[in-house]
Image 1 (cartoon, rainbow, N blue to C red):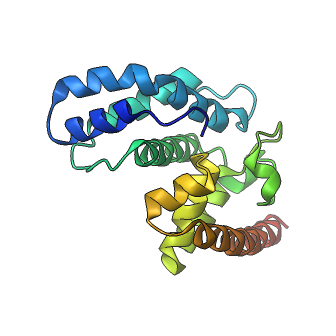
Image 2: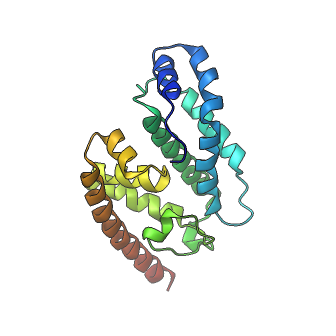
Length: 198
């Protein structure tokens, strides 16, 4: 993530977790630009003419964050990890509701590799990746969280390690294995789709 960690953000998150409603009002201006950056990252890979805009994605995530009263916020990295997870869910729900991926739905096929860490002009098959990530979570929840935090949340190795309370070496190992597993699963899904379309 860009920017240096702000101790004020962590302090406000903890205050908000403890029921101090004014802490949220102080927190939002401090994190808004980073939330917009996350949203732009998600929206950049979406098809042209997508009806959900960056601001709408940030606002929807904000509304869901407000409802997250049960979350005991650890720190700034934890907040952005949850925010990224919410944005992923919003986009997946939106894609499902609009049936963009029904029988291919004009979706562009992708492979899961390191190039996806940087924004790409190609569209992402978000539903296929989401399905593969859910399957990975059933097999190894921590590896799925590593992908979610690094790929969707844009967290660094160190920030991911901090959120998951593991070593950076563990994050790197999980990241490498998870990428290989997801590539294989997405390849299977693509082969199944081609067979079904034939």
